[in-house]
Image (cartoon, rainbow, N blue to C red; front, side, top):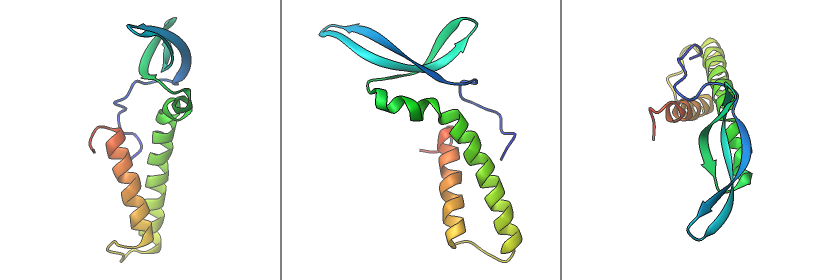
Length: 108
């Protein structure tokens, strides 16, 4: 799985707090994005600052999950070459594969 072309905004995602004016007043928001060429490019605008750490870590988590999936699939194949699925390892592999597909736009 490693080596798959990235479809999301590349770079290290970071956060910044902003105030936005709405018809009912001003609201403090948190933007997650990439600082590139001196400009901040917003990837997501969040209402809750509590969501910012997990959203900004998403690219690194996706890459880590891809590496873990590849490693676990290889180890499982070596340890249980006759396994046809249904074991706890396959459950974890399926969850990881589905999450990767979702993150890359191929899942729900």
